[in-house]
Image (cartoon, rainbow, N blue to C red; front, side, top):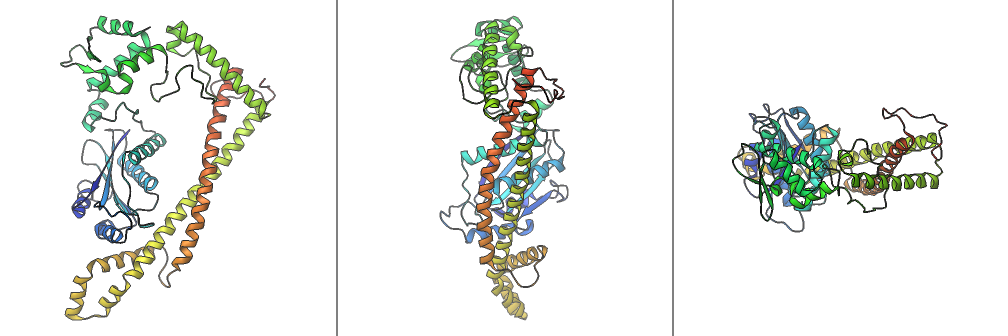
Length: 456
């Protein structure tokens, strides 16, 4: 899992950059990366971009994003890769940033410091609750893709790194209390039964405006709501009543028809179904409705043979995969174009200072070096970046580059729409197939039934 925090840098940018690039924290600077700037001169390059920003200037120089991983869950090389993927996904190739991975503490964490203004459209980055929510979603997705755990919304967001470390090492009494509550919820028939079972096993219960718990040997009471939204009184009552069956993510309330085709639920493997006859009855009705919707969908789409369904899924998955590759290629080309335009414009904008300094001699040269220090640094960084891009002669036409960028941006937008539509289809057909496998009693190891098997 990864905890995400972000805060603005309003002053001492150089000091903040020096801190995150500390050799003792970054394995002698091995775990330092950057985009659109050089780590050693990032403060000057950020300042140059800020000086050309438009709109609401504000007083933010940069934003400091921290991604902290649970102790022992990830190797530092992989954490660094995840940090790079996070920065690229969040900033979209529009902001200069410096990424470092610190390995000097008990937990590995990434520091991403990015300029407060975009070098593409010159507008300031808007940091608020909505943007933070988006960053956390991206971080969670990357953690899942890398096989790491993900924080349950509302459950662990208030935990400090120390608490995460204690929980990972099995020393957190909060974690143990949550595990106990989860167990008693599965065993109890109603709220009163839940409380009776806990008290019978030695837990002390304090009933007030909200319920508090104290485990045997625990010094203080702990309110259920402080453990997370899943442990507030009303939420526990809902879980006991079977109003939701998933602890890892919120699902529609029982009886609420979203209009979408949902998975057929496995009564045999549901502990709640075994404990509650009423819940078993609801699951049977739910399964009948979902089976009917599943068959209706297949009939409408003329997918009456299992082999037809499998072929359709294969077709959609292939189209989704190819669209994903094309979209990633468009995003990479856009990022490269933005960087090229930035460096060409920076090169030209500072060329006068560079030329005057190169032609000067003696004290005049020293005076110009002091007077135009920032411009000379920007020029050197732009020249180096252009050479790394294979440009060491005539500079490309910026107007032509921007026209290509505008065209590619429109293509990317269309690809995103196609990508999102195919993503929904992949999820829908995956649900359909799982339902059909259960309806037909298909082997759970993934072995298909004969292609001649009819779905109806």
